[in-house]
Image (tube, rainbow over all chains, first blue to last red; front, side, top):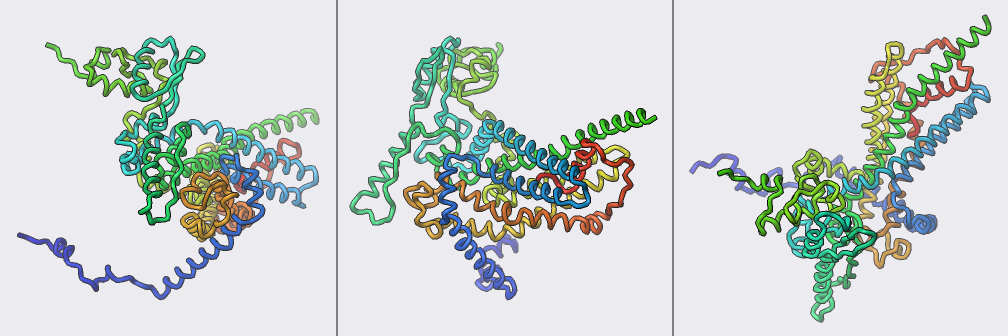
Length: 310
Length: 249
């Protein structure tokens, strides 16, 4: 048998090889330790104190129904920068008073239109983006089958993620194949009702029941006399709680990595919309044509003035 | 004898065998496309299937699926959640550093080509400075936040009522909207409230030397043919100034 040097090397585990030693740099190790201490200090003295501050308690109460804080923070940042520009314009001694006011007003109007436009686009994309995020989650589950919770839910295909979420759907009562649809829906565990000429189908909490059955088992183990761990009994989930992919993950899949990714998708959308409007659409696609229109009117006015003077 | 494939049978609306029917038609209830087989084997119109639960057909095979499954994209999405300020600068880098200069140059006429080149270089320099400064300044903040997120019992003990959770724990906090909102504010405040204005001023200060020594560009004082004396021309003048500085943010 021929043993290649690579194979031979891979079977030899010399304890003193460079790879097995933890290399400690005299320069970087103390620097890394200091950096770590700095981050500990920030966690203690910035984040922890911020969370414990009175302002945060007031803020948490006032914003308990606010859904996308990232957009508001992006808007706040732009407001501050625009305000800085407006104030600088008003303080500019090289311009006369009237001119300063006009320019500052221009700053404020630009900010106002950009902010309103950003919010409008961000909100109008919400449903579409929820669909994109659901598809992203389905792809994540396809790539990471462990996250599907097969042991509890049974094997299922990520392409059917909407059905797993128990998404409602409706069908016209006069649809050509309505009897067959009802028959199939019944077989698949959907509840249905006829309302305003439409059959409304809703998944019958089938998966919630499975999860709750598993929770019952876990709770029984926790409550048993032989249990010595620190876990507390788990609460059951509501069958109708799932309305979006984030809730589905939190209630059913319980995958922390996926929660981070779903939240990240929301942030990506908002920041991209705000970035595009503030830094591209307004300065390039709106300002440029506006400049040209302005220059055209200015030229016309100059020509009229010249004609009158002549 | 002509043998039809299953696909042919589906497209022609023939009835399928019970076993096949179960397999294909049960999905058919959920399909949201034009050529699905329904229970009696007839082809459903888009109108009748639109209301049904959507199924991601060909999942994993489209371009977007390949993008979503790539590790790099998932890493990028993670950055957007965990390092929001850096991500914000990254968006600015792409939009103001690539899209905007490209459009500026494409829209430039012969007369204002030099101005557009200067504006494009300005936008690129501004975006790069913003990204570099944010990445450096926010790195320790992001790492510190990661520590809070990974060990909330140490840092957030006693906030059960404020955060609306029965007890402080990683999984419990994921469901808390106040926690999500406050986290985002805490993550973004160092950049928004504290660093925002100094960063903008630093950018303005650093741009001329960067343009001079990196791009080899220097703004020459230009003699204005027309003095801006009307309101419209003032707005035009100001919008040009704003383009130079970098917009609302």
